[in-house]
Image (cartoon, rainbow, N blue to C red; front, side, top):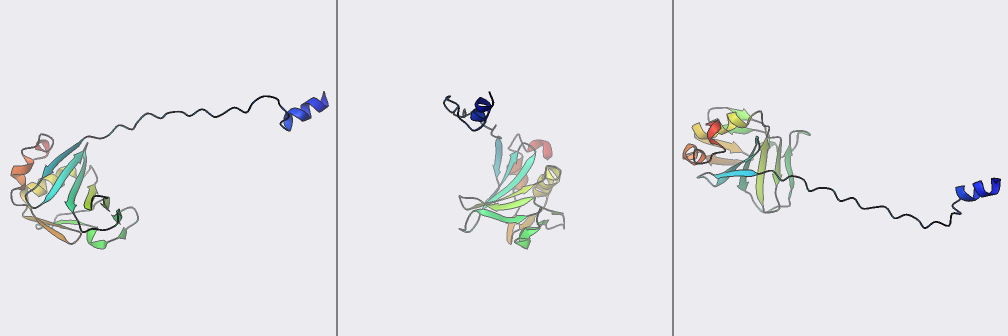
Length: 149
């Protein structure tokens, strides 16, 4: 009896090893994006309540340009600054694989930023200066942005 116990502990079993089963994970729900292209060549994107400012950048490697969490990266991307002095901090600014730049903002600031974009004259971020002329008209054509105006 003792020999059979030791034999089973050391793997002397005649059973075939069991292959682990592959469990298929359900696909993550993709978040719907509502996009408005503004006259000066940038876009505003709503992913739920998360606001993203998107524009074409210079060709570069995809990756993080600025991160609020680490306070590292290009410091010119640390604040979205309007011509009236209003400032908002992006959570993260990234160079995307298609050479666009995306700046993501907290949902807490979404309404204020959209209002400022509609009512102000210009905005600066990451060394880029964008004119906001015609932005209120462009935003008012999107059902997703109307509640913020």
